[in-house]
Image (cartoon, rainbow, N blue to C red; front, side, top):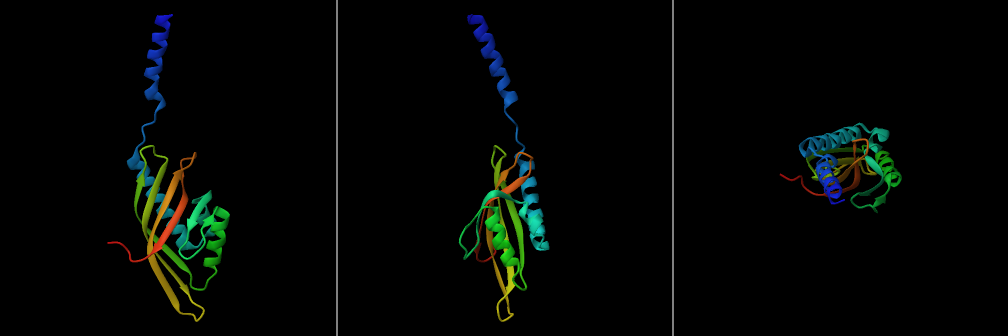
Amino acid sequence: MKTTFIGLLTMAIMLIPACTQNIDTKTEKTTLLNSDKAWANAAASGDIKQISQYWTDNAINYFPGQVPAFGKKAILEIVKRNRSMPGFSLNWEPKDAIVSESGDLGYTHGSYKLSFNNPEGNVITRSGNYVCIWKKQTDGSWKCVLESSVPGPKPD
């Protein structure tokens, strides 16, 4: 009995490395940064269907000067309202991505520029910085779970 127990314990210990995954965080970082860049390109194009693919259904968004939007549906209502403003454009530039050692959570950050026409037709331009927290999905894609931006100067 003791020999059987030791044999099973030895087998279990030997199987532990097979159960753990080696995450290539460098590759995941590149993939995450590329996801944010693709999202920025979708936003620049104005394709709302494509833009919406980058949020989880339960994402949270903190737009400056707005009540927080909880869930993709609420976020898209704000996106559609903003995009209906004359002269609206939004561009952002991801600066970096960080991925957890487990490879399933990460964040990106960078700078943004937003423009729209005020009621008198004058162009209003705002810029600032943003951060997005991303979660890796079961299909291997990355989706934003929390997004926040802050008006201000672009960092050096």
